[in-house]
Length: 460
Image 1 (tube, rainbow, N blue to C red):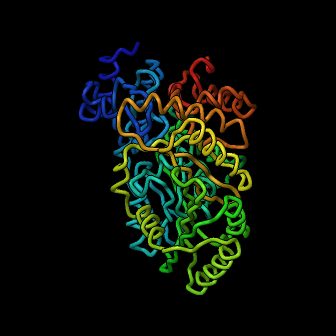
Image 2: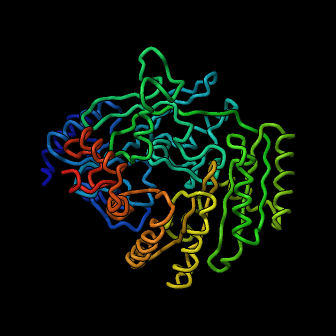
Image 3: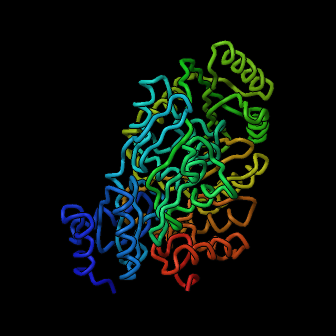
């Protein structure tokens, strides 16, 4: 049991009373995310300003054996930050500064809760950009995107998920309070310009771990010049096999892909119609014109029907400028999602069509995907409005996840007990056992994100 009043008093010594609360009415907004996960209430919410305050909070948590859960922008779709047990919610909302923009080295250093929109506004004043690639748009936080190794339809065809190639350095506070810097920043006199330092790539250990190994307090990312050249296309393909061949064509030149974004969408009401939206990348008009010409030639060869570019302009434009109407249709829920080889897309499509639409008669979930460098992120996604839909939706999504993850799919978005955690734990791979060993070593009392990713009983 958490001694709430005692912990409150200890936290107030660190961050003052104005930045910590134990009141129920303050806890409620922190008890849900954007998934159908059950409500989970923290005992405290605390808003740190500095890494030193985070160190002190983690010291209190270790001494009092109180778990700490990390909240960024609060846009998780899979129970990824909700308190699996009563504990402290570490709201990083105040740590949102842009610390440095190095125009010579093309590196931007920010605090974790700086949003993509805030960074991009400052970068564009200098003729620079990040090329934001989050499905939730520019309001998402950079730290949250990186810690979950996220991505979206814009620029992922060329640059992959966050962390694949754009992270330069990280500053992490470990569960015991130690501060670790990765990459060239690990060498005190070197600066922030290189992902690799002495020995292994430690940044890779934290990216995608969803906060179970440390709290990110600062990160440096690769930035790029903006391009004034914009060309977008839409096309309807006759078969999924044609989509696959087109996917291979788009990024066969690895590192010099024809596009920065390509998005596949299939409506449940028309499961044989494969709609593509495309965003062509290039710094010179001649290059973009050439790529457009080659893309159109390939689409014609495959029998694709080229359509109005307006839907692609609208979609990719809103990804960069904001998705104000994102939840008009209800709350999103992604399931049956993961990365797989381009040639394996039919595996997931068949599950969506046969198991979801034909067998279960569920016709509210579409099938979509985004091409990555030499692989594909595919998913099923639906919307819901009423709370009574949650349990039914979670049960159905779990059944689909169970089938999907038997095949050649790398799961995406682990989350807590209402996410994909149990599917990962059931496989008990060498990778999973190593992750548990790392967790036990870095966090012997299992303070950070207790119950997220790894069940509590497996760490005893």
